Length: 253
Image 1 (cartoon, rainbow, N blue to C red):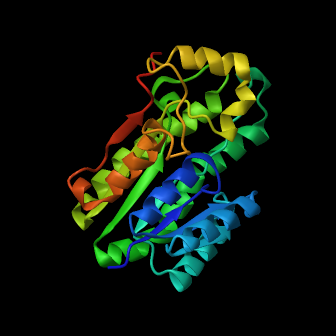
Image 2: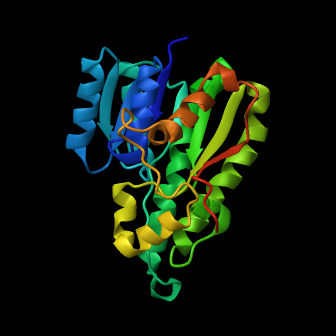
């Protein structure tokens, strides 16, 4: 069966690193974005220049109709999705009492309902084939909680519950569902925390720095997170389902 991966939120950061790793593992990949079309197009072109099969598609995972259309285009262009990586997510720091209802709804729509939408869209083919792999993205804040990130932490905790429950439900159909929980990875998303906070988080991380999703040629640790996803997607992980794999540099909370 042809290996086809859909990685949401993959034009930058962690998703980009995952798309590169999976393409080099032999997957035909769809790079998804909602804003940075230039980055998604650039990555797909880069992968094709390396001899990989790749496309890009703009869709907001919070929009169920747009997700269904994206999956249909992937099936038409690359083939049916055999691996779904739910990486798309948003975050914002604020005190709970200052949080607006609109933001609360938006972060749940993207981080949690987005995973629901994508899984619903790819699951019929996986069920028909009795084969497939779903990898969700949580966070160490989904495991420990985080001050001033209540909404984000709540969605990431819910992703863990979704993963563990769906894994049990789908196990008899040979569809595996796992979750990765990154620590503080140095991406665009975390820059809003400010240099002082990032430096403090680096100090709380035993390896002495933040994680790096890219620049794979420079650092073994920088590819470790994407490598975890590659492993979970591989046949070597065929007996692993319902698990949460943490990659956080030994972060101490």
